[in-house]
Image (cartoon, rainbow, N blue to C red; front, side, top):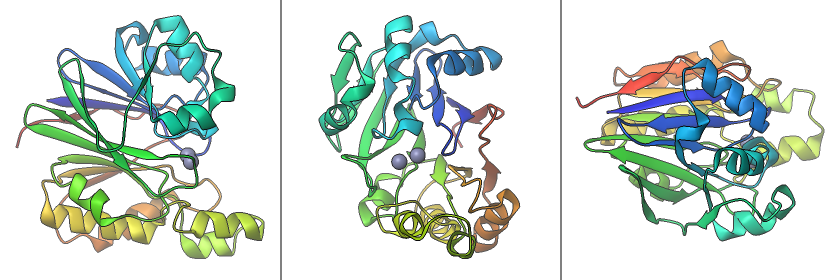
Length: 258
Ligand SMILES: [Zn+2]
Ligand SMILES: [Zn+2]
């Protein structure tokens, strides 16, 4: 079995706990160290029990609390070498640090984690597939577009955390300056509701997918109900679709063998 605790997701910070019976990892540390600890304790988890913290990329909403978390709770940080270089201002040198390459299969306690390259405007950007026994959880946020490799990598996923960042009309008619609109909408920006819906439908058709948590929703360029309806309407298969929250942890998700 796998359990997932989304501590919060959006441009204000991203952090997500995944665990099985004996190993617990964090994906991204985009809140302050104190806030990550507070949110973990709120859902009954102890940061001292973390085996590792995986970092997707160097943007502040993913890396903000990584250094303090590593030092205070003796958690090794795992990231691509390019993420470490680009994010060096976030580190003081006394963190526990390990690197992974793209498509590397890592053994973290009894969890198997594969790094999956994503298209985003950072030095390096990674999604993950976390496997425990016969169940898998996929994690893809901060990607301007999906690749065939993304799709194939996520075929085993029973559950996905999947970006649904914006509605394109809301983005282009919204308050962002035009250079930022173009950045978000580009193939290395963020994923629209429609593109997310399409990916989920295809993955559900080809793979094991039974549930999705839509994540990294824009507060200005999206509407939670709209994101839900766009993704739901596109589905041919009956899969559970829920929303990640920004300001508080979501209810834990249990992924079990079919
Ligand atoms: Zn982000
Ligand atoms: Zn980003």
